Length: 551
Image (cartoon, rainbow, N blue to C red; front, side, top):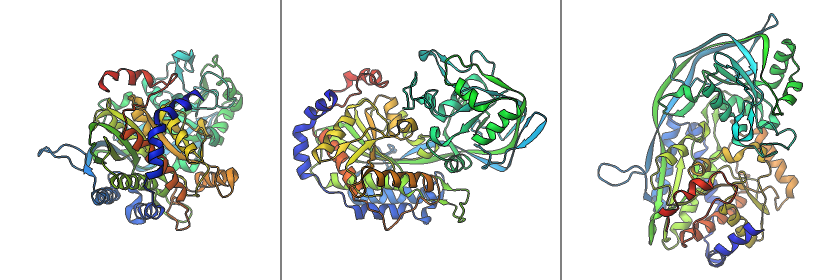
C-alpha cells in the first residue's frame, strides 16, 4: 500500500489533466499496422533477411509520416539517421544433424526437432563433432554462491555433456532460496548455457517440461532449430558451450532408466542444497553437424520527439520488430512465422503512441520511440542499444516496453512481465485505478517473463523499466475467458506460423492499455519526477551510482 500511495502522490496532479485530455488510440490503426507487418510479404521479419528490409522500411516511413525526428546513428554530416546499426553474428546449421546416445549397450537415435533441439553452434566454428562424451546429470545447473548453492560440487565438467533441468530448484515446491514460484535468472535457459560455458563443459541438454519452461515443445523446436544470432563476441566460447540443446522429457527419462537411474527421484534430490552431480554410467553422447557463420548488420529504428525544456532527458517506448522469419513447416505446410501478436502489435503500439504524442504540444523531456531487432534471438537489439545508447543511460528517465498485447478485447485489469520492484509499476497501478481498472501482478512469475522482454537490458544497466502486459479479467467473459484465450494463444500460435493477423480481433483492449502508458509517459515527460528502483531490487544500486547526473 505504501508503494502505491507514493506513486499516487508523485503523479496525482498531472494525472488528472492528462486523463481528461489524453488523445485516444485508434484500434483500427493498430490493426492495420499489425496486418501489414505480419503479412506473408514480410516473411516473418527475420533479422538479416528481405523481411527485415521491408519491416525497417515500413516503420521508418510511418515515423516520417507521423512527424518524428530521426534519432539513430550520427552520420558524417552530423545529422542522425533513422536507424542504429547492430552488428550481429549469424549462425545456421548447414546440412543434416546426426545425434545419438549410447547407454547400457543400446543405441538411442536423437532426431533433430523430435527428440532433441540442437542450436547452431555460436562459437565461430565450421563444424561440431562430439564423440562418445560422458553424460552427467547436474540438477538445475546452478552455481549461486550468495545462496550457498552449487549443483556442480567441484565436478570437472570439461569434455562432458551436462543434462540439466529448466527453471529454479524451488519451482516444484514453491518454497526455497530462489523466490518460490517466481523465476530468478538462474532458472533461464540462457543462464544454464552460460554457466556451462564458464565451467568448460562440452555441451548442455536442457530437459524440456512444459510447466517449468512455460511453453510446449513446438516453441522449443521452432525457436532453437532455425537461424541463431548473437552479439559479436571476442571470445564466444566463454559464453557458449560447443553444444547447446534441449531434450524431450520422456527421452531423458528413458536414458536415465537405461543407465539404472530414476529421473524423478534425482529431480527431487536436485531441489535440495545437498544434491551432487550424478554420472550416467555407461552413457555417452555423440553429435555431428556443420555450421555456416557470418557477421551481418541489423537495424534498430529510432524516432524522437525532442523535449522543449529538458531535451537531454529521455523517456523510451520500446518494442521489437523482429520475429522468427521462415522456418520449419507446420502441419499445414506453412513456413512463415508471421509474429502478429509477437510483436507486430508492439510496433503498432509505439507508432500509435508516437502519433498521440505528436498531436499534443511538445513535451518538456524528449521521448524516444525505439523499435529493436533480434529480441527473439536473446534480446540482442535492446542489449546492443543499452550498451551503445543513442542517448545517455544515466539521463534516461524510463523504458516502457510493449510486447505481445492481447487481441481478446478489453480487460478490467492490466499487468506487467514480472515484478520489477520499480515505481513505474506503481504508476501503472495508479493509472489503471483512475480509469476504473486494477493492476494484477504477473500471474505466472515462474515463467521468468521479467528476463524475456526488451526492458531487461535497460534494467540491467539501472534504467527503471517495465514491460506492460494485457490483463486476463476480460470485460466479456471475465478471468475464465481471458485465461482460455491466453492458453489458446500459447498452445496454438506462440512462436508458430499460426501467429497471424485476424479481422475478428478486438483491439479495443490494446488501445486501453496503450492509453495507460501514454499517460505515464506524458506525466514523466512534463515533470521532474525520476522513477526509482525500490528496496530489494537488484538494479537499485546501479541506478544510485549515477544519481549525480540527474537534476
